[in-house]
Amino acid sequence: MRMRYLWSIPAAVAAWFVGGFSAGYLKGLPGGTTLFVPPRLDLLLLGGFAGGVLAGLLIARIRVAVPVVLVVAAGAWWLSGNPWQDRDLLISLLAASALGAIFGAVGTRSTVVAAFALALPIAWYALRPAAHLTDFRWLWQLNGLLVGVGLALLLYVACWLRGWRSAYFWVPLAAWYLAAFGVVAAIQTIERAPDGQAFNPTVDAAMDAFFNSFEPILREYGAWLVVAVLLAIPMVALKLRALPPVPPPPDPFADRPNDAVLGDDLDWIDRDEPRRRLLSRRNTPESAV
Picture 1 (spheres, rainbow, N blue to C red):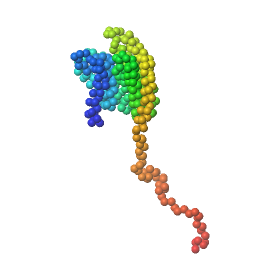
Picture 2 (cartoon, rainbow, N blue to C red):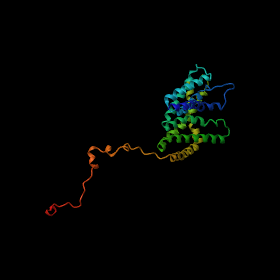
Picture 3 (cartoon, rainbow, N blue to C red):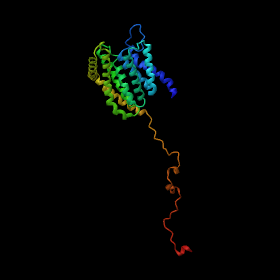
Picture 4 (cartoon, rainbow, N blue to C red):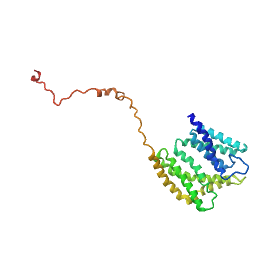
């Protein structure tokens, strides 16, 4: 087990940054900056959670994954030159990373939990590449393809260990996947709120963004979601067909003789039976002579 940590911990550190924050550099950072963790609430929460999930999946131990991501998050905050006095953003980063690591580590034992944990990062990444496209045709095709592929992967991951028995979770998993788009929209709305705005208007705007995100997703990408479900069915079927049959459980009495299984009152089974005759011998005076 210790040998596994020699590669899983460095891989988890790289996955925390690449999976959580590398997408933030696609849009570019202000010139002359070398920020590892830009101080943005949406990036800290969503990126920290996404990176924590990947790190937890790689390390597969809560007691190891949580301290690792906390140390890495605090170190990245320090290397970025962010002020330690800004505790709200730092606590948001640490809490999101630790929560993601917990879900990721638990997901190594239950692929259904792993699918629920990956829903939020996939929803966050699904709409990013086409966010600035102006051509509706390409916007609909690229976004719809990414949204559909994300749902198909989640349904496939949910059935990884238990097969079709986990298909009962497809409906709540698809609902949570749609809700994840609302969570992303709500967090981004809070980030775009003006400085000094009151708490209640910010919360109301976030709630409106959460509920208003469902209708466009279902209207624009509903067909892609149906295709994703139809694609996940043969994916799971092919995966189960490729697996070898489950071996029968071992016989606990295979290496024991029969005497170890039978009780003392059944020892007569091993004795030789007397020879049986079809007709019994008659005791007559002739036979006596």
